[in-house]
Amino acid sequence: MTAELKSTSDGATMVLTISNPSQRNALGPEMYAAGIEALNGAENNADVRSVVIVGDGKWFCAGGSLQRLSANRERDPSVQAESIEMLHTWIDTIRAFPKPVIAAVEGAAAGAGFSLVLASDFVVAARDAIFAASYSNIALSPDGGLSWQLGRTLPRQLASEWLMKGERIEAERLHALGFVNQVTDSGQALNAALALAASLNARAPNALASIKELLNEARGATLVSHLAHERDHFVRNLHHANAGIGIAAFLAKETPRYE
Image 1 (tube, rainbow, N blue to C red):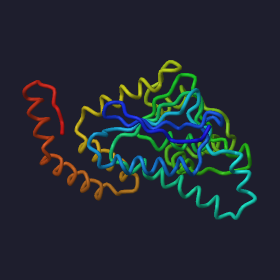
Image 2 (cartoon, rainbow, N blue to C red):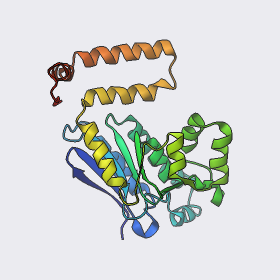
Image 3 (cartoon, rainbow, N blue to C red):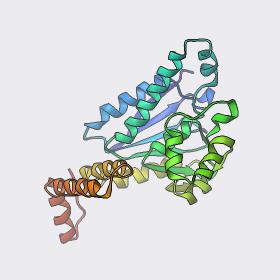
């Protein structure tokens, strides 16, 4: 079966399905390119208000294909470098995408699959889902921004443990540490993610885009510069039509219907 990234719709939510079941939904350059194209196309599409990323079947994503990586050892190093650059462009596109991105995880998210999860704005995981930064198990180092994410959000000793030992991490532990927003029964991650997406779709998209941009900028900004960014976003959103809709609906005790 050909590896592909399938794109479908559920109301105002675009669902991207990593489909490579014979290799536990392993990734490759074609999927990276498809992911970038899908998000770029959805960015200015008003009919799309959120994105859910899910794996086909029992796995979320096993990361890179070991068969492809083994074959690339016999090719010029630039081949693998170009592949990783495309993965990194996809990761960066997810982070910069101005609409909520939700990872719905069943089974396992390993290697670059774990990177995809951490690049998302929300994570919904089945109770029996597992996560692994398993690069060191095969004498490799992280990609997909995994060391950046873990290095900035965990104590160094814990990040070292996860990346150097490459052991499985349970969904409940990630939930306790704040990496997973919601834990569900097995087989229910996608349904829960779609319900979360629907609740976000009902909110003003310009406000959500501002929140995502501000969160992305916050870690690298000084307080003074970030306060200025908050001011500019607030003023711009106040003068957006949706603020008028939201304020009027709140005062009237009605449900707003945002543009």
